[in-house]
Image (cartoon, rainbow, N blue to C red; front, top):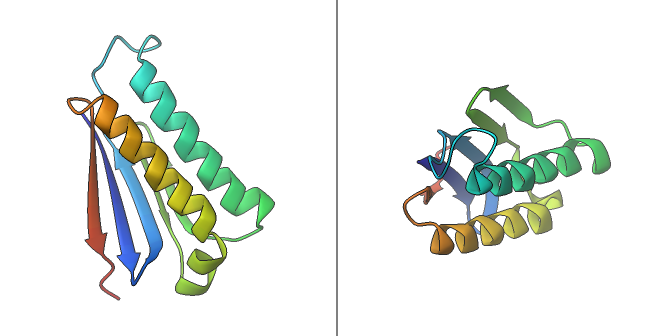
Length: 107
């Protein structure tokens, strides 16, 4: 199962972290993994390459984390809110393969 953890400060997402593999199908055939990966990389790349922000980012096999300061998080709010909504809908469609967690950022 893929776990997507979003940390909020007030109503702003300051961090999103994804880990695991969905297990929907074999590697290369897994539509859930593809959908999640595509959405997450689009959000991360838009934050870094289009908005030119510099969040703390960690990427490795089966894991991605993006963490921002509150100012940058506010600048990217529309993007991260869209990502959260998109992954929420995917979770509704594939509840055995994707789990969203919502937490409060503890500064």
